[in-house]
Image 1 (cartoon, helix red, strand yellow):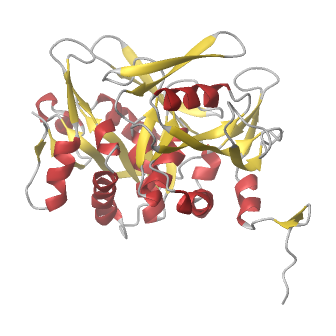
Image 2 (tube, each protein chain N blue to C red):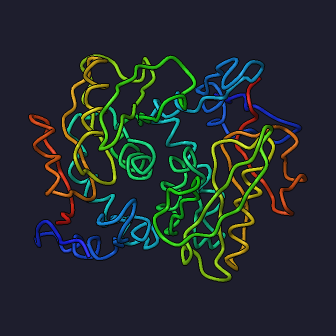
Length: 183
Length: 189
């Protein structure tokens, strides 16, 4: 069970306990934080989205960028509630139009994130959303894409943080907000 | 002032549909030559239009006691959760192989060239739960068919398949695995 980051909001306890930990996925020694069990509880899913909406409503955010694929689950409800557009950031060759690409390093090998050209305008304030931040590699790639398009990433929002993997430090000046920490 | 309403066979068209149709971008020759790809990402860049599309689904399903919304990876993940939240239903992601971390059931299906596979977590659905399946577009119905199989194998009931876009043959009289398919606007050619 993941530990709540702070006891303040009573909804966080329910969110933390709804996340299932699956040992040895994707490989031995790793404890996978499975948010699909959170999605099976409508009240907890509602609370999760509400916590983000309450934080970002009225903050002049014009776009929410969600990272494929679990960022697609949490990003759109937030975007819809705060009146922002939703921008999917995708694995290579999924987006049909002209894209910009950002390569990033994995533990073994590399991966790549893409965004449509024209999705965001210079000067726009953007929120990046994913279910979880580990090393921060994917989220840094997302920030790069948006900054290359001239946008400003005001914050990154995730349900879970694995603080031991130091993703927060990798994000440097970009603030990170999470609901739950898992050691 | 009397507004001239758009009609289709004597039935009034919802005024929100015009904006939905015009916000879809057609990308020729993607993913391969001859295919006119209907790109919904441009709809997502218009908050009001995205909101309207979700509202139209929610209005249709509100009174139908939907227990769960199953969304097909990955574009079904964009439309499914807002609908689930509005219906107070759970959201069940149906995923490509080896993405879901827990125990899964798998359903193979045939593509134009080759095969693919859709998976769902064991325990995501309970027997007799009423389920709405969501994807962005229905063309051959192959993916929807696999999704229906997964849900029925779990003992749950598919109430309807709902998509933003569809090819005209999938109107209310043409079903997939005996299940009705509903979509908001025709695929653009």
